[in-house]
Image (cartoon, rainbow, N blue to C red):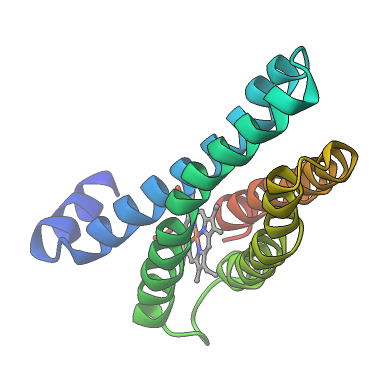
Length: 160
Ligand code: HEM
């Protein structure tokens, strides 16, 4: 079986390249979310709000600049892999990944144009209670996306 797979890859490297880019984008996105939630946020909790909230807003601004291209790559490479096989022939796990992935993209869009935009406004106005509330909302949405991401990966691995 492994030999057959290797043979197919040698003949047509495109699916392997698509999968490589797809997984790299997923790592960049979910790895960044894990870092934010489990390392940056608790560590920054020791700083006073006038230092903490501008720092978090800056870090998020840079990280989200990486998330947008990751989403584009996930969508394009994911659809390329899916359509190559055909929606009708694709296993249930692949359909689930498409559905869960689309929900994740929408949630990120909401996070970016809702709470994140308001966090930047709060920081500019030195409104620390509002900024704190927005960081809390961003963390909640990011946690949901992390869980959804894990579910999407589980679906494509276990439900084939
Ligand atoms: C809506 C867009 C998406 C579509 C259409 C899609 C489609 C696919 C397909 C068809 C595969 C199977 C490739 C194969 O086994 O040959 C796959 C694998 C994978 N996808 Fe997605 N995906 C999407 C979104 C996501 C998201 C949002 C994540 C996580 C952040 C993700 C992470 C992965 C990973 C890690 C694999 C590799 C699993 C393995 O080793 O078999 N995908 N995707």
